[in-house]
Amino acid sequence: MRKPVAVFVALIAVCCLCGVALAAGPRGVPHRYIPRSLDGDLQTIVRTTDGTSFAAWSYRNGAEYDIAVSRTDDSGRWTEPEFFGADDGVDQVEPTLTIDADGNVYLAYTDRAIGAIRVTALRADGSNWGQPIALLDKSPDRVYSSAKLLVVGDHLIVAYVANGRTAMVDLTRQLVLGGGISALTITESGDPVGYSPGDEGSGGSGSIQTIGEDSRPVEVFSPIRKRGTGSGQPF
Image (cartoon, rainbow, N blue to C red; front, side, top):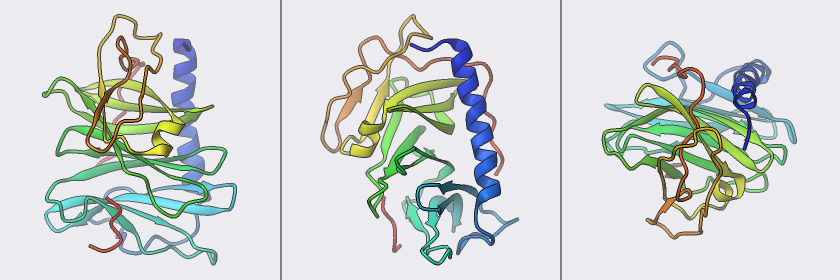
Protein backbone atom coordinates (compact mmCIF):
# COMPACT_ATOMS: atom_id res chain seq x y z
CA MET A 1 0.00 0.00 0.00
CA ARG A 2 2.48 2.67 1.06
CA LYS A 3 6.24 2.65 0.73
CA PRO A 4 8.57 2.18 3.73
CA VAL A 5 9.90 5.72 3.25
CA ALA A 6 6.34 7.10 3.42
CA VAL A 7 5.75 5.20 6.65
CA PHE A 8 8.93 6.65 8.13
CA VAL A 9 7.93 10.19 7.10
CA ALA A 10 4.47 9.66 8.63
CA LEU A 11 5.94 8.67 11.98
CA ILE A 12 8.27 11.69 11.97
CA ALA A 13 5.19 13.84 11.31
CA VAL A 14 3.50 12.39 14.40
CA CYS A 15 6.41 13.54 16.58
CA CYS A 16 6.39 17.02 15.04
CA LEU A 17 2.64 17.41 15.44
CA CYS A 18 2.83 16.39 19.10
CA GLY A 19 5.44 19.07 19.72
CA VAL A 20 3.31 21.74 18.06
CA ALA A 21 0.25 20.68 20.05
CA LEU A 22 2.08 20.87 23.36
CA ALA A 23 3.25 24.40 22.57
CA ALA A 24 -0.15 25.65 21.43
CA GLY A 25 -2.32 24.63 24.39
CA PRO A 26 -3.85 26.98 26.97
CA ARG A 27 -1.94 28.14 30.01
CA GLY A 28 -2.30 26.22 33.25
CA VAL A 29 -2.97 22.52 33.71
CA PRO A 30 -6.23 20.56 33.92
CA HIS A 31 -7.99 19.95 37.20
CA ARG A 32 -6.62 16.95 39.13
CA TYR A 33 -3.37 16.87 37.16
CA ILE A 34 -0.40 17.32 39.51
CA PRO A 35 2.97 18.04 37.83
CA ARG A 36 6.05 16.28 39.20
CA SER A 37 3.90 13.70 40.99
CA LEU A 38 2.93 10.08 40.41
CA ASP A 39 0.72 11.23 37.51
CA GLY A 40 2.06 10.47 34.04
CA ASP A 41 3.15 13.03 31.44
CA LEU A 42 0.47 15.41 30.21
CA GLN A 43 -0.41 15.02 26.52
CA THR A 44 -2.22 18.00 24.94
CA ILE A 45 -3.53 18.89 21.50
CA VAL A 46 -5.61 21.73 19.98
CA ARG A 47 -8.60 21.27 17.68
CA THR A 48 -8.16 23.98 15.07
CA THR A 49 -11.78 23.86 13.91
CA ASP A 50 -13.00 25.52 17.12
CA GLY A 51 -9.89 26.18 19.25
CA THR A 52 -10.76 23.57 21.90
CA SER A 53 -7.77 22.05 23.67
CA PHE A 54 -7.71 18.45 24.88
CA ALA A 55 -5.44 16.90 27.49
CA ALA A 56 -4.91 13.29 28.57
CA TRP A 57 -2.69 11.75 31.21
CA SER A 58 -2.21 8.67 33.39
CA TYR A 59 -3.99 9.64 36.61
CA ARG A 60 -2.76 8.03 39.82
CA ASN A 61 -5.88 6.72 41.58
CA GLY A 62 -4.82 4.99 44.79
CA ALA A 63 -2.97 1.83 43.80
CA GLU A 64 -3.90 2.02 40.10
CA TYR A 65 -3.61 4.29 37.07
CA ASP A 66 -6.60 5.49 35.06
CA ILE A 67 -6.74 7.59 31.90
CA ALA A 68 -7.98 11.13 32.57
CA VAL A 69 -9.19 13.31 29.67
CA SER A 70 -10.08 17.01 29.92
CA ARG A 71 -11.00 19.68 27.41
CA THR A 72 -11.36 23.47 27.48
CA ASP A 73 -14.80 25.04 27.60
CA ASP A 74 -16.02 28.16 25.76
CA SER A 75 -14.20 30.39 28.24
CA GLY A 76 -10.90 28.54 27.79
CA ARG A 77 -10.98 26.86 31.21
CA TRP A 78 -10.25 23.16 31.64
CA THR A 79 -13.27 20.98 32.39
CA GLU A 80 -13.38 18.33 35.08
CA PRO A 81 -11.72 15.23 33.59
CA GLU A 82 -13.48 12.11 32.39
CA PHE A 83 -11.89 8.79 33.36
CA PHE A 84 -11.31 5.55 31.50
CA GLY A 85 -10.98 2.56 33.84
CA ALA A 86 -11.66 4.35 37.13
CA ASP A 87 -11.63 2.00 40.14
CA ASP A 88 -11.39 -1.17 38.04
CA GLY A 89 -8.28 -2.41 39.85
CA VAL A 90 -5.96 -2.40 36.81
CA ASP A 91 -3.70 0.12 35.08
CA GLN A 92 -4.55 2.18 32.01
CA VAL A 93 -1.48 4.22 30.99
CA GLU A 94 0.40 5.97 28.14
CA PRO A 95 -2.38 8.03 26.52
CA THR A 96 -1.87 9.71 23.15
CA LEU A 97 -4.15 12.04 21.17
CA THR A 98 -4.68 13.12 17.58
CA ILE A 99 -7.37 15.06 15.66
CA ASP A 100 -8.51 14.78 12.05
CA ALA A 101 -9.41 17.60 9.67
CA ASP A 102 -13.11 17.26 10.53
CA GLY A 103 -12.46 17.89 14.23
CA ASN A 104 -12.91 14.30 15.43
CA VAL A 105 -10.59 13.51 18.37
CA TYR A 106 -8.88 10.13 18.77
CA LEU A 107 -7.41 8.70 21.97
CA ALA A 108 -5.26 5.60 22.36
CA TYR A 109 -3.82 4.15 25.57
CA THR A 110 -2.31 0.97 27.00
CA ASP A 111 -4.57 -1.42 28.89
CA ARG A 112 -2.17 -3.46 31.01
CA ALA A 113 -4.88 -5.87 32.16
CA ILE A 114 -5.03 -7.51 28.73
CA GLY A 115 -1.76 -6.30 27.17
CA ALA A 116 -3.62 -4.33 24.51
CA ILE A 117 -3.89 -0.89 22.97
CA ARG A 118 -7.35 0.63 23.31
CA VAL A 119 -8.55 3.22 20.80
CA THR A 120 -11.59 5.46 21.10
CA ALA A 121 -12.90 8.64 19.49
CA LEU A 122 -14.94 11.74 20.25
CA ARG A 123 -16.92 12.99 17.26
CA ALA A 124 -16.60 16.66 16.36
CA ASP A 125 -20.35 17.14 16.90
CA GLY A 126 -20.59 14.95 20.00
CA SER A 127 -19.96 15.16 23.72
CA ASN A 128 -19.40 11.48 24.57
CA TRP A 129 -16.44 9.23 23.80
CA GLY A 130 -17.14 6.01 21.90
CA GLN A 131 -16.63 2.51 23.23
CA PRO A 132 -12.87 1.78 23.13
CA ILE A 133 -11.67 -0.82 20.63
CA ALA A 134 -9.00 -3.21 21.95
CA LEU A 135 -6.13 -4.08 19.58
CA LEU A 136 -5.08 -7.57 20.65
CA ASP A 137 -2.63 -10.20 19.45
CA LYS A 138 -3.58 -13.88 19.12
CA SER A 139 -0.48 -14.84 21.09
CA PRO A 140 -1.26 -14.55 24.83
CA ASP A 141 2.34 -13.67 25.71
CA ARG A 142 2.66 -10.79 23.22
CA VAL A 143 1.74 -7.44 24.77
CA TYR A 144 1.25 -4.04 23.19
CA SER A 145 2.23 -0.64 24.63
CA SER A 146 3.34 2.94 23.83
CA ALA A 147 0.86 3.84 21.09
CA LYS A 148 1.13 6.79 18.68
CA LEU A 149 -1.62 7.97 16.30
CA LEU A 150 -1.65 9.57 12.86
CA VAL A 151 -4.61 10.33 10.56
CA VAL A 152 -3.97 9.78 6.84
CA GLY A 153 -7.03 10.44 4.68
CA ASP A 154 -9.80 8.12 5.83
CA HIS A 155 -7.41 6.00 7.88
CA LEU A 156 -6.16 6.10 11.46
CA ILE A 157 -2.63 4.69 11.72
CA VAL A 158 -1.86 3.19 15.13
CA ALA A 159 1.85 2.58 15.83
CA TYR A 160 2.81 0.73 19.00
CA VAL A 161 5.46 -1.47 20.62
CA ALA A 162 4.89 -5.22 20.53
CA ASN A 163 7.38 -7.14 22.68
CA GLY A 164 10.18 -4.65 22.06
CA ARG A 165 9.50 -4.10 18.33
CA THR A 166 7.50 -1.29 16.79
CA ALA A 167 4.55 -2.25 14.61
CA MET A 168 1.67 -0.48 12.89
CA VAL A 169 -1.94 -1.20 12.09
CA ASP A 170 -4.17 0.73 9.71
CA LEU A 171 -7.80 1.27 10.81
CA THR A 172 -10.53 3.10 8.96
CA ARG A 173 -11.63 6.26 10.72
CA GLN A 174 -15.25 5.14 10.39
CA LEU A 175 -14.49 1.92 12.26
CA VAL A 176 -13.17 3.86 15.26
CA LEU A 177 -15.81 6.61 15.08
CA GLY A 178 -18.63 4.12 14.70
CA GLY A 179 -17.79 2.08 17.82
CA GLY A 180 -19.72 -1.09 18.54
CA ILE A 181 -16.68 -3.39 18.14
CA SER A 182 -14.94 -4.30 21.35
CA ALA A 183 -11.87 -6.11 20.04
CA LEU A 184 -9.74 -6.58 16.95
CA THR A 185 -7.18 -9.37 16.72
CA ILE A 186 -3.96 -8.97 14.72
CA THR A 187 -2.87 -11.87 12.51
CA GLU A 188 0.41 -12.60 10.72
CA SER A 189 1.35 -12.74 7.03
CA GLY A 190 4.47 -12.68 4.89
CA ASP A 191 4.08 -9.13 3.57
CA PRO A 192 5.18 -6.54 6.15
CA VAL A 193 4.76 -3.54 3.82
CA GLY A 194 1.68 -4.37 1.76
CA TYR A 195 -0.74 -4.41 4.69
CA SER A 196 -4.28 -3.33 3.94
CA PRO A 197 -7.38 -3.51 6.12
CA GLY A 198 -9.65 -6.46 5.46
CA ASP A 199 -13.28 -6.95 6.29
CA GLU A 200 -13.70 -4.98 9.50
CA GLY A 201 -17.33 -5.95 9.80
CA SER A 202 -19.76 -4.30 12.17
CA GLY A 203 -19.72 -6.78 15.08
CA GLY A 204 -21.63 -6.22 18.27
CA SER A 205 -20.46 -5.66 21.79
CA GLY A 206 -18.09 -8.40 22.91
CA SER A 207 -17.40 -9.66 19.38
CA ILE A 208 -13.89 -10.32 18.07
CA GLN A 209 -12.98 -9.22 14.57
CA THR A 210 -9.85 -10.12 12.59
CA ILE A 211 -8.42 -7.48 10.25
CA GLY A 212 -8.26 -9.50 7.07
CA GLU A 213 -7.23 -13.10 6.46
CA ASP A 214 -3.60 -12.28 5.59
CA SER A 215 -3.03 -9.07 7.48
CA ARG A 216 -0.35 -8.07 9.98
CA PRO A 217 1.00 -4.91 11.55
CA VAL A 218 3.63 -3.16 9.43
CA GLU A 219 7.13 -3.29 10.95
CA VAL A 220 8.83 0.13 10.96
CA PHE A 221 12.32 1.36 11.73
CA SER A 222 12.85 1.76 15.48
CA PRO A 223 10.96 1.23 18.75
CA ILE A 224 8.81 4.01 20.13
CA ARG A 225 10.18 4.57 23.62
CA LYS A 226 8.05 5.24 26.67
CA ARG A 227 8.34 8.77 28.05
CA GLY A 228 8.41 7.58 31.67
CA THR A 229 6.39 7.28 34.23
CA GLY A 230 -16.27 7.57 39.94
CA SER A 231 -18.17 10.09 38.26
CA GLY A 232 -17.48 11.22 34.73
CA GLN A 233 -16.10 7.81 33.75
CA PRO A 234 -17.03 7.00 30.13
CA PHE A 235 -15.49 3.49 30.28
